[in-house]
Length: 285
Image (cartoon, rainbow, N blue to C red; front, side, top):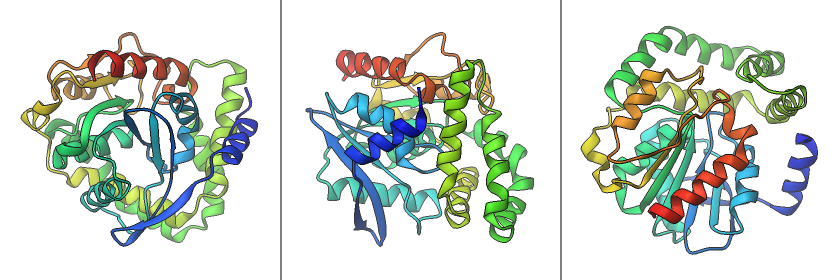
């Protein structure tokens, strides 16, 4: 179990390409083979490669699309429109959105605005984009959001990287020593070429979640029985109440039970998550 070896091999065998759509450049990979297309929506770092293990394990049965969140779209409404235009440019008529953390929020926003392109959703380690969750986020983050953006724009980013790795590792829980080293390498790699400019971009998108219009249950009626949820009960980023609100947003969702491992569980438990995705797609889609 060695992250550096794994990601190096993946990059050698899975080159990314670039395409300009809606005035911004998408860096992406579209691979695999199958009748259904899965679109992976990565978390708050915005880097598609962080889902490399999902790509490798899904591409034998599905077409798999993964992309970085492009610079130049710093509000979620803009990003949603650009992602839709991007999917259309790739001639993707229908897709299954698989989103974790921030990607789960993005999936809800895409499905609400562009239901015509969404065949189903799999959401991990995330929360519902409803009124109570948005109010909770405002109470927790509104006072620190702007100072955080200021710091990212004024403090030399190389000074911040060791601190950001350390903070990220606090979310790693109940793991072996080998798994902890894997996650340490994971974050060191993720921040190695990460820039302050891109962090400002992603932080702006995260802050903008607080400005979103709350989702309503009826907006997802078209996804009855077509949503899978895997929500770790020990997720330190989203409370059980937030998770219950997410479940309530959908009619007859498939809820994976007894999920543990904290917010980062999808990274270390990818094989188990992929097994659930396959079962869900085969049985419900």
